Length: 216
Image 1 (cartoon, helix red, strand yellow):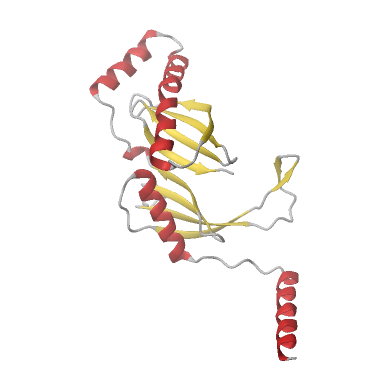
Image 2: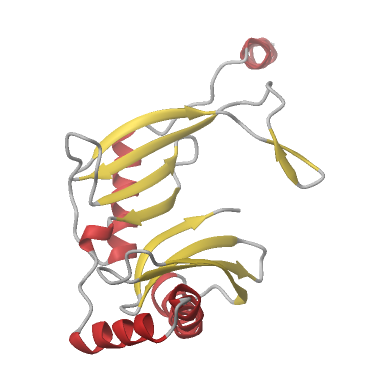
């Protein structure tokens, strides 16, 4: 009899919580910071130990025929935003986001200022490409895509996710207005066989990873 009463009370409490629209339980700043720093250190091969942590609530999304939409009644997305070496105007060395409910880190960014400089040989080649065509940006973008694609796939396979078979690597953007200083950043979607998709940003010609995000 007592067991039935306890079960009934538990059922009533759970139902009340659901009806009241209570927010889901969050993992907390400490665990989020640990997960975020671990993801940064793994992705960029560094050893950061301190960071600032801030909880953000963002509008939730609905999907209508595969298209994102805001209907207004979605549960908000709760995210811990974690930054390493933030200055007074918000610049950072490293940035990551952690799902506040699951505790999963799914994005990591590195500041442009941390990119290693081009070698003399790389700089000379970039300068040559820049000077040979009036539409140098198209020439550079084509070269950057061609040479970066195998490097991006190799990095993902060898370093980031060795046990995840890649279905395809899809190029979608390259930008290089500041290529004389740092390089051209080239963006890809990495589609895995299980349907998981990452966005990956790599810089040509040094082939450093600038950002990676799990998007689905």
